[in-house]
Length: 165
Ligand SMILES: [Zn+2]
Image (tube, rainbow, N blue to C red; front, side, top):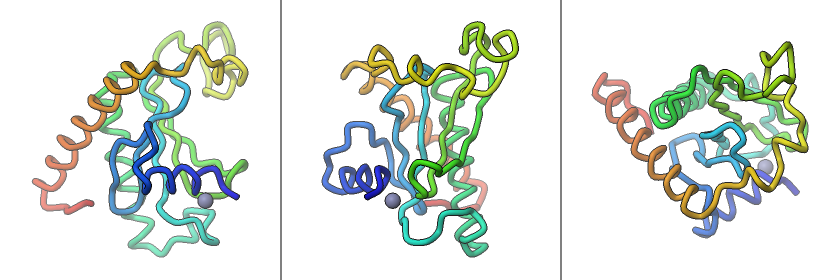
């Protein structure tokens, strides 16, 4: 029972509307809730007993981190935030997955330290409010923008001679 494995199974059946792209080590998906516009996740392909970055052997860890960085670069290009925040938590599902949050000035309102701080200082019930679910059209537009940016970023990286994916 793992929510991430369930989502991956949906991707493999072609039934995950949030799926954007498969890379070598993981799957790129948009978040269900978009309070932080462009919120994206990068799901490691396998679950097993590898719940920490240091459980991965060095080549795999390096590939996973490099690909996560490319995803973040694509999120930056697609959604033009002020800053990217990265989280690898795994307290709900111990399946390696990155949360990639595009951050903008004022995006946690007056929460945190006078509006400055990590995403988790914004109330969970507000972040996960149904009003923050993208419409079908918004989701299609975000997926198109992120996929296009990912393909540009990956092509540029491959052009550097550092093959990825
Ligand atoms: Zn899992």
